[in-house]
Structure formats: structure tokens, C-alpha cells
Length: 232
Length: 330
Figure (cartoon, rainbow over the protein chains, first blue to last red):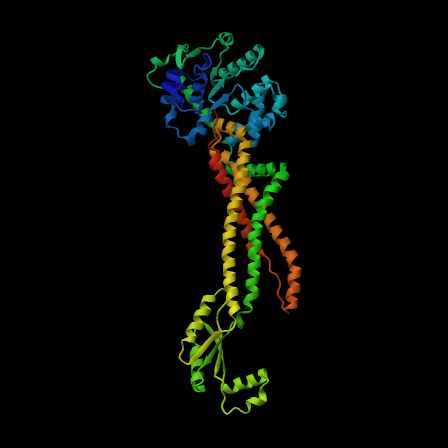
């Protein structure tokens, strides 16, 4: 699903965020990305979501070389990805339902279909009763779950989460992680950046740790070095 | 093999899921989206009535000013076109010229493409007129000879704003060897035409400047709108909204400003016409004229609103193309 081939990312000013990263995340896999802050976790996710472009190397997403995707085609790549942020990026000028419906509206779904899918997504995160609430009236954990509902409502192939439990207490964090595990069970590939090592160990999914922009420890079943060509 | 089949089946299912029954067809989705976005943009404007009204009013005033000037000029043009007939050129022939020669000249000149008709005032008729007008009637009886020249009054075929043509006609006629003096009777008409031409030009200059002002006003309003919706734009980009999708609500906002501004400008124009109509009618009556102020008319009203819409769209397009690029998720 995700294949990094010798990827380097240098930010303007000379800071190397990622240095010769090789990585292969098979389809349907769930994995954690760990490391100290500044180790390059966020940069790695941003490269996959095409928020940033690599300085060198190639990234394949579902067999597509992202280097060959022009800026105008980026939206269509992003439609295959669900992205979850630490600060959930909800829009406070509209109710929960409208927030979750955004990806579907962008992709031109029918009204009835939007209603059906938004309800299903809210149901999965346990917030069906809050569909008419304003996001500001929800607790931190609930807001995060609205963010997750928005990320999965269009059934993406890949779910990326950047510190999704950063602001939550341990119990809520575990709940959120269980939610990701459930999406993974129905076939979604999931990559979560987190520094909560206890929680990660508890989840039992493989862990990729980054250190100073390099892969320090790759717990994935197939290591990138053994894979010669990108597979879907 | 079984594995491969299962994979294919899954893929087909995925492909199905991404296609029709759930998604609208491209065309209906496109129009549905446009309708929804245009109404949403209007709703946003309606939610802030005072701010919207003030912006639209500025646009309206900027548009109404040149329109009012245009109407004023148009009316002066109509009024003065009635004076066209009074633009006459008097040709004083040499005293030695005989009547037959004068008649020949008259017949020749009447075929000239810029001449409508020519009145010939021979010496006897001229003397008669002179007697009537001057009051020297009896005294003139004692003259042995008629001292007056033959006069030809030329009515040119020239309409508004053709001052040059009148001048060149006078010159041409003056060069004829039978003619001693060619004189344009109504010099001031020529001046009026020139003045109208200058006014016409200045309306274009003023209109262009005000059009640019409208573009800037709309551009700036849309820029502020973009700034205040930064978060929404970022999130939309992150979840896969195309540039066209993000651009659309702002373009519609600009279009709505154009429409509202155009209609307001039309109302302002109408109001100023009503205010002016009565005094102008009174003035016209004093001159025994049937002159009535004429308004914008249907076609020009349509044109005004179309121009206003175009300015709204262009203004917002300028703002959007400049500022949307700056907002990228990080």
C-alpha cells in the first residue's frame, strides 16, 4: 500500500527531516510510527498525504508513484486517504453532521447516500445522537471521534493519524485506538503516528520507530530491503 | 487461484462502490453542486445584511455615476439633434454674379452629398426682406441700383457630433469662385457638438476608472472572505477538494455582489431620474418644448446588470487566483 524508496526530505533552511527512508506497508496492515518529537513522524505522514513533497527518493501509494502526480491531481490522491489530526481540524461554524459529510459532498455523492453514510460513520464512532450538535459543545474525545468519522466516511483505502490521542486521557486513548483496530479489521490500511509506547505495546500491531529522520527499528513483517519492487 | 479470484471480486466490489448508484452522474453532480454553492453563497451574504448592503451600495454608486452621466449626455444629444435643421451656411455671392449663374450653382450644389437643400435669395427678394427687417423701406426707394448680393442659404445634411464635416463643408463652399463669403450661422452648435464629444470621452474615462474601483472593492471583499474561511479551505484541501470546488463559493459571492450592486445601481439611476424629471419638464415648457427626459431603457438596464455581474466575477476571480494558492494545509 505504501512504499518508500530512499526518501529524503530537507526543509528550506537545511534541516533534514527524513534521511534515506525505506519502508513498505502492505495493504490491510495496521502499524504505528513512533519516535521522539522531531524524529520525522509528521513529515513522513505529510509526504504520504502529499502535503509535502520528498526532496529525493520515490513514494508509491497503492502502486502509484506520487512523484508523477501533478499539483492539480493531488485532490484525487487525497480522496483515497482519511487523515486524522491531533487538533482534529473540525469546522466550528457547522454542526457535526455537516463536518462529517464534507468528503462526500466534495466527491459528489447523492443526498440520500450522504445521509446514510454519515449516519453509519457517526454510529461507528458512537456519536449518532450528536449529529445536530455544534462541535464546540462536544468534549475533546468526542471531537476527536467526529474527526475520525469524517476521515472514514468515504471508506478510504488508507487511514493516516497524527498523534490522534495526544490530548486525551489514557482511557479515551485506548478507546480511540480500538476504533482504529476495528477499521483495520474490515480491510483499511492504518498508519498511526504516536509516542504513547505503552498503548502501542498493548495494541500489538507492528511498530516503526524513527530516529533523527531514519528508520531505527522496523517491526513490519516484510522489511523494505527485501522487497525489490513495489507491490500493490 | 482462489486467492486471485477473491482479490478480483474484492476489486470489482470496490470499483462498484466508487461508481454510480451512490454517486451522482457527473453532469447532475456538477449542476447540483453549482446550484447548492450559489445558494449557500447567497445565504452567507444574507446572514450579514449590513456588511453586504454596504459593499453592494459602494459598487452601486460607482456604477450609477457613469450611468447617470450617460443618461444626461444622451438627453442633451437628443435635445440638440432637433437643432440640426438650424445649422445653416449662408453663401454671399459676388455682386457681379447674375441670377442664371446662381441658379446653376444651386442646382449643382444640391447634388452634393452633405447638402439637404438650398434656398436662393435673389437681389429683389433680398431687398424686400431688408426693407421689412430694417425699417429703411422708404429710403431704399431712392437707390438707383440694388446693392445687395445674391444669397444662398445652405441646409447641410449633418447630424450630431459631426462638427468637422460642417467646417469642411463651409471651407469647400467658400472656395467656390462665385462665392464671396461662406458663413456658418450657428457657430455655437459646432461648439456644443465639440463639447458633447469631450463629455462623451470623459464618460468613458470615468467609467473605466470606476470599473477598476469596483473590481478592487469586490476583490478586497473576497480577499477578506477567503481570509476568514482559511480553516475551511485548509480542511477542504486535506480531504481532497479540487481547486475548482474551493474556488466556486467565492466566485459565486462575487457574482452575487455584482448582481445586487447592478440592481441597486439601476434603482439609484431610476431615483435620480424621477428627481430630475419635474424641473426639467418645467424648463422645457418655458422654452415651449415638448422635451421629456428619457431613461435607461430595457436593453441598457440589462447591459448595466450584465456589466456589473462581469465585474463581480472578474474581481472575485482576481482575488481567488491570488490568495487561494497561499493557503495550503501544513
